[in-house]
Image 1 (cartoon, rainbow, N blue to C red):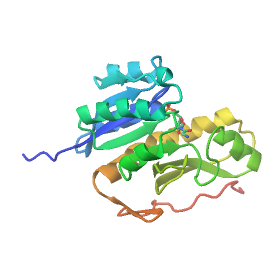
Image 2 (spheres, helix red, strand yellow; image 1 turned 60 degrees about the vertical axis):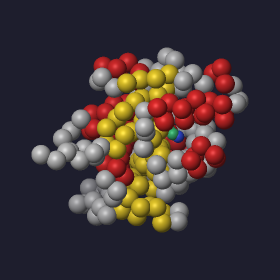
Image 3 (cartoon, rainbow, N blue to C red; image 1 turned 180 degrees about the vertical axis):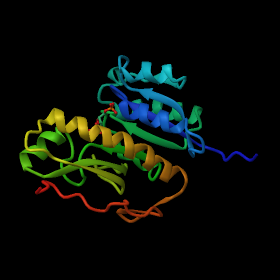
Image 4 (cartoon, rainbow, N blue to C red; image 1 turned 45 degrees about the vertical axis):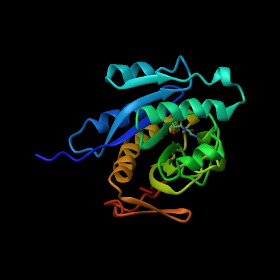
Length: 221
Ligand code: GAR
């Protein structure tokens, strides 16, 4: 039997790592076109590190604290690790450190991020608070290619949830997180199998729309 070569992926985390765990679980399924080669944290105490180890995924800490504002030096250490592991694709999973334009351009079209809003709305911090203050009736999450601007770049996949009248940032975050765990593995599958192409500011895919293309919120019953 011929086994297709899997793309080698590094996941970069800073904290909980629930998206990381979803990617690791998906990568274990038969036929998934990528393997999670290493999880790298810039925080020594990121809870996601233990989860990765439990799943027998190699982990590495490159503590960003001693580098202070010297982003280039931190990224040189990061790049060395990525080279050592022969990484082809990077997935940011709650990686809370800004990357330099040089590093982002080095990984153009090969670095994915997930953000818990329907971009281009509500970039940056507190996206759920921003969504609730704006009174949107639908929110969600976005997987996109990383460009130098924060929480921007060609959109690979989005998932939506209805916002409820009594939502708080925490309850909305919980429902959006469930959809994050669905779309991040699917987006990685698409990219790793060469099903996504960057066309200017836009990502084109071979995938078709959702079986049910509509989500109306609030629903009038
Ligand atoms: C996720 O909700 C992710 O979308 C968000 O951080 C959380 C990390 O959770 N990322 C951003 O806000 C990026 N701007 P996790 O560590 O459990 O995956």
